[in-house]
Image 1: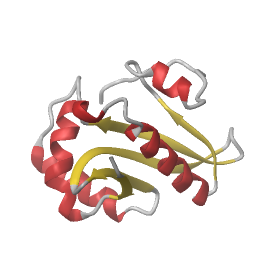
Image 2: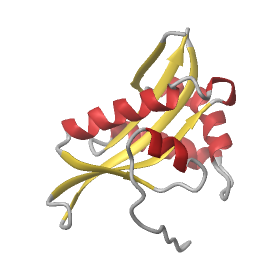
Image 3: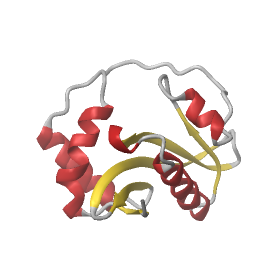
Image 4: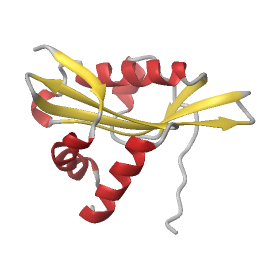
Length: 140
């Protein structure tokens, strides 16, 4: 397997959408909203959407942001989403996506990479992430 990690482009949208649908557990994907968000993210300098490609097939993606903070004395990178197709899990695809996300974050001056998860704590611990805080949310 020769995995390539690269920035998502407009032509990837129809291959990212099924992975996003697999990722989502508590929302319904509204396709026109997804398409608008996808376009906005590709244009944002504070966001990155990365894709994992194996022999021309898109097999995973991640989405993250960088933003200034007070508490960390600078930029923090926040991983919002990461998904790998079920047939390609446990083959280091997620790790490759995370490494590329961290490299992007460092290039933006981030001093910290963080995320929230309920389903993949052991994965993140294996790549040297530490549990740090509880996650709270409120739907608006």
